Image (tube, rainbow, N blue to C red; front, side):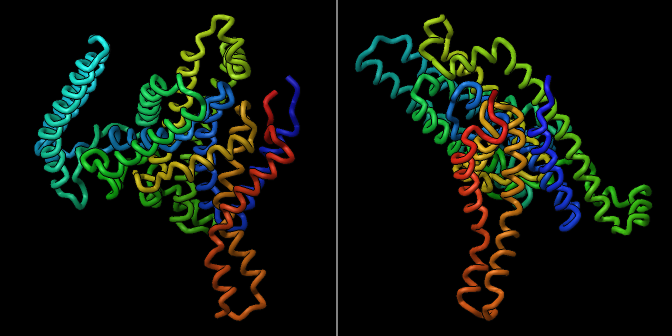
Length: 434
């Protein structure tokens, strides 16, 4: 294999940017950006599997990411025994009745002959199922949310190591993608985009308002960490000795080592995903997927089950996004459903894929690094630019005040400008598909 010096140069430039951030701003900030760059690269890799391999336009990235993030709560947080005693059984019974109602409606639709009787039976099953579910589920959920609502008010989780939530988050998102794909993948691409966006909004609404499951807008904080917290690391003798020799405080050294530990974990996951993605892309399966992407009609004529293959790649890509969601919640140490904004951050992930180069796994990775770095650094850069441009004005100038308060929007301008420049001068991305 020939060495691609252009690709090496791009990654070297990104490494240099992170090093300069550490030197001129802070190493804690630099490693924080690195960790989120790694998670963003994994998200972009998931979207690239769907779009770059099969041409599937998924606009519900944040929904699958949030659903994967829920796994960190359900796996790592300890169970709330009082909440389980107050209404745990009722909630489980209500959920089972709801699932049984949906299953019954499907059976009625499949088994009965078309006609008014089938429609009436379907409505009757759904209405009866809804009433029974609400009668049992609603009081139980309310009882759970009344249990110490300031800090608990939900069922909690299993109390297992948080790293186990990463594959579980991937399974959660993959299962959701399978259900969505069974319904929506037979539709046109624009309808698929609408369906995935709708599902994303539904998932985030459930996380926001079903407090018994995720505390809703009250957030779940204190999620166990995969790496010891800086407060715990500060007491270690080697941290104190290193702080004395380096001239930094114990807190700064501990914070750097905590983030460095997460970076190593995330690099292992990203490296494994890249290796698997490259193997898949260059296999007969990968060539078949690209053939389906480029010409579905010809692929169908050759006997390929296009819908089934689309479902497979849709589930795989969404699973990767769910994995990234669980990793992000682990890094933050909290689940904040209100922070998931489907359109805003879905757009950001898509910019990563387009700028990096759709259809190329390494392109998705470098796109994730560059775009997230710009997203974080655009606001301070915008403030510096506005401050420089208005330095000749009085400190109480209306123009200066307005420009300084609006500097945060520089990141949106920069994202749009980066996308426009890439589409104009490098429409296939920084590392285009071969």
